[in-house]
Image (cartoon, rainbow, N blue to C red; front, side, top):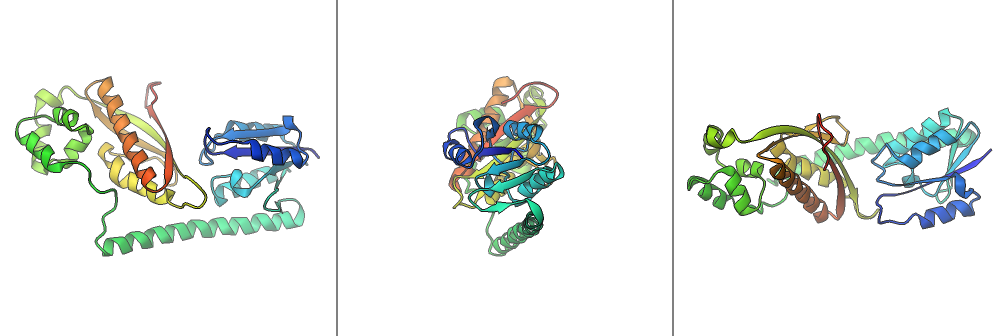
Length: 292
């Protein structure tokens, strides 16, 4: 039997030192400790993937705490089952839990039940909260900070969407969202301006995390981002519980596209900040190697 160790922190600004020290104290050799500085929401973690290759039947993996292995109970259970299928067991030092032997099988069964209950509870609370809020007349999303009246005045004075966006420091797609439906249709019929714009599809990979374990706002943060920010870009979620969205951007040139991406990123960061959280966002253009 060989001992391996795994440690993880969510961001590059956090330190692995405490976890690494605990693993060494538990008897794990330094060359058998693997680590990641990445959110648990990322399934493609280099340290974890290397660990999966190194371990063999009969080995034991030590982790300081349950939440250091996966992003949530369900993800952690899936990883435990994957290791169990290889004949590899996992011990959580601080929690006093091990997946070895008969008791270990019971632990996995219990954790699986907890994960299932956790998923159901999250869905129920989300739906109940949304229905209650709607009944009280509460609207989802941040309070409007855009001067909608100014947008309409500028448009009626003859300014195009691009000009308005630059003057007010907002995204062009936001201008269209603010305009009256009839005015928006008229704007779309102006070939002199619309013909200058291109369209591209971009994949957004979005992670949302809480600033600490005492904060539980990341679910609401993602909901507000989906409700407030992404509709401007005809967002399509690629998988029901996934982290990727397909966005459509209308832009004049590369500089305009980059500005719109920066605007969207800033809006998402602001929403996360309001709920004591943070985001990690990657943008990748479909069909090219361009990334932001």
